[in-house]
Structure formats: structure tokens, C-alpha cells
Image 1 (cartoon, rainbow, N blue to C red):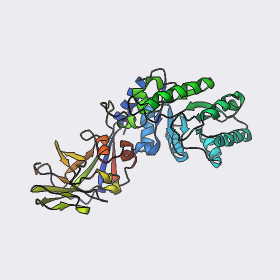
Image 2: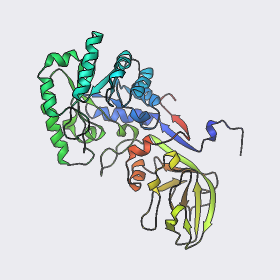
Image 3: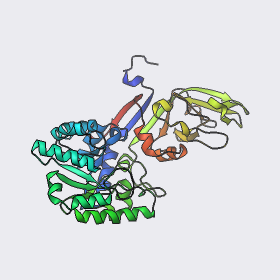
Image 4: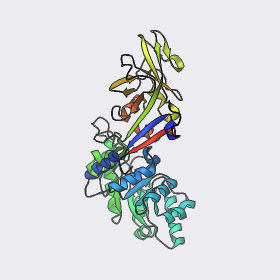
Length: 377
């Protein structure tokens, strides 16, 4: 081993991020509704790939509007996209008003309390500082009730004085084709939109962009699909993979039938086996429930043209995989293993872990060497 490597090269695993794929995904999504503006959701540190790199790449592809969850994310996006329109989805706290206004970050107001506080701030500053309004159409999370929205729409001078520019809601079940709630939400949003004729309207998330043309309205808000994730269950994913996660084999062991592997002795070997121990675990954001038991298989990985299943539990820093039958020239100490990427879709791993691709991507930790490809990297 060459110990004269850089500190970055001494990271335990590596993330390869294809910025060209990110840009191509945005262009594909934008093409689904040419009359609408296609924004980019860059919250969750750009779904794990780095907010700044995500925003820069999307901006180069033609994106001019971004959505974030936290004020800090908004400031980071503003630093790399000084001319962009940036909306804050995560609620307004009164004390944040001046900083948001100074940075040109538009809060999306989801309660009458927030609207009252923003109105007061606008009056004090002498300006109708731009904002958005969130209405709840059936998710029962953030947003004005339908009655509150109707009452607000009945006072157009108030809407103008508070700087409202955008009306949004959020689809709860668009990832499940044919769900009744989606049609109900589109109908409710259409009704409310008609009461705010001066505002642009936004309803479609990734699944809405790809599967619900009636939800497109004026502004699309794709998130997971930009980063290669599956937006709609049960259909082929048209998006290019953006993130490849890899880790290295640190040891190969031989196991005998009847022996168990890992914490809790959850999986028993049924044949003479070659077990590779890989330097990745839940401390790195690789989900603990991706492991296997005697009762249920876990996730798979890929190396050198071969698939290998996980064996036993995922621990903090390590996993075990079964490389029986894989040539030693492929499965050996130091070999890189694809945890997810072009050969193992992130959503497949998420399914095995009983979670969603969003959680895996946004949970990627700091212990990786990140390599960016394309996009002017």
C-alpha cells in the first residue's frame, strides 16, 4: 500500500457523482411540461450529493428556480446561484425574516400565523417582500386549510401586500399510480388556484411530473428523480443514475455449513462459503435493515460483473457478502464493491431495507471520498 496518498484518498469508501446525468435528468423532466418552469429541489444537501454542486449543475442545465428546506440551505444556494429564484419550504420563524429578505429567499408560508408574521415584516420594511403560500389539499402536513385559503383569497389587497408570488401544495400519493387521493388533490388545488389568479401555481413533485400531467400547472418541483431515484412505483425508471456508492473488501474468509455470520447470528451458512468483509456500515449511511437473515434475503452488491448477496447484519463499519463462486481475481482484498449505482439501483437496496431511496441518498455520511464527473467538474 502507498501511504503517501492524500487525506481524501484515505477515506473508507467512495461516492462517484455523475453531474452530466443530473443535468440530463433535469432536461428530461423539463421536457415533460414545456409550458411550465422546471425548478430543482436541492434540500437535504442536494439529496446527498452536495447542495452547491447540485445547484451549479442544474443552473448550467437551465434551471432558474430552486427549493430548499432550511434557511442555511437557501444561503448556500444563493452563494452559487445569485440570480436564481429560491423558495424556502421548511416554514418561517419570525426572527429569520430579515435574513431571508436580505438574501432574496422567499419563504413558503403554510399557516395563518406565518402569514401574519410575514405581513408585519413587510409593513415594517415598507416592501411587499416576495413569498409563497402553501395550501393543504389532503396531505395534512403543512399548509392553509381550504377555508383559510378561501378567506385569504377574499382579501386580494392583503395577498398583494404580503408579496405572494406562488401558490403550492404537495402530492401525497403520486408515486402510487391510480391512488384516489391524487385526483382529489389535483381537483382541490385547481379550485383554490382559481381564487388566486395573480399567482403562479405549483403542485407536481417528481411523480407528478412523470405521471400526472394534470398536476403540472406553472412550476414543476422535481426532487428524487433529478438524482436518479425511482419516482413512481412499479414502472421502469427513465432517469439516469447519478450516484454510485462503492466500498472496499478488507478481508476474505472461509465459512463452513452451520456457522453464522455477524451480530445476532441471524444467518446460517448452508454450504462451504467464501465471505468477503467490506468496509462500510450504518455509520456511513448504508441502511442497517439491508442485511439478511435465515428467513429473508438482504440487498445485493456488484463487483466485476458478478452479483453478491449480503450475509448477516449490517454493522457500524462493516458488512459481509457471499463471494462463493466469484473468481479470486475479482473478489479479493482491496477490490471495490458497488453498493448501489448503475448495476444495483438505489431503490432496490431501499426496498430490501424497507425504506425509500430518498433516505439512502440523503443519509450518505461524511466518510466517503466524493468524486464528481462531468458538469465542469
